[in-house]
Image (cartoon, rainbow, N blue to C red; front, top):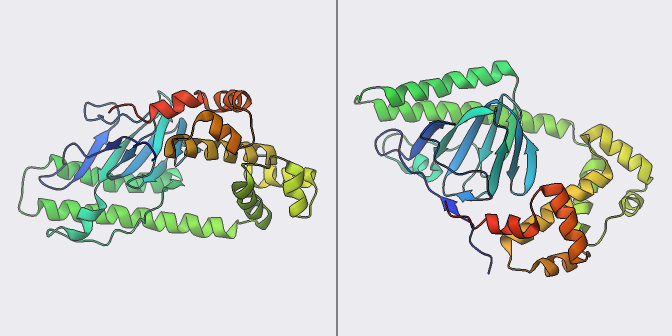
Length: 283
């Protein structure tokens, strides 16, 4: 059986009985330990006013940019390795509450997949005006309509972000490239036993040189870099989600234990043992 990954809960509520929490990083309310692999019982929106560092979501590492929003659904495994000078805030909430509460029920529009959107400063600042309304309402004295106004503002925030996600999805589909798509799918399927750029290129009926150059132009990474990245994701999944020994994981990926351990430490910064151990760190 896979070992349980630490799961965090919302520790307080922003307004009365509404399970939504707004906290600014670096303040006393910043009580979630986020530098090790873990998951939440709630959904998070992370707003990066200043970027820097990396955010690993479901074993895929993403560079953190300023003016970006990261949506982390409940149960997604992630950890944040952000730069010391990066900045921002988090809104944590229970999606189930949103659709069942008697105050103001809403249809949650953001879906169940992790999403990162990198915005221009103008669009990001517009969304910040909505989050500022939320902050102001938290600080308001109690009124009869306070909960209703707060949840309406949350709905406006979600809808505005959903619009940006839809636009990003549309642009991504326009930019989709068949070689890139087929190559990535093939690597994910065969990465446990095939590390040859030539073999992947042959199946696409192109040369290895053309494949690497095409990927570099379209994605900023060569074929070798993509193969390594997908290999590391596969290893991380087995470290976190299984009780296989490191020797067994190495065998599954057609490596000897020593070689794979060195490769993992060089590219991830943790040993395989430490990476697995971190998931059991108490919070």
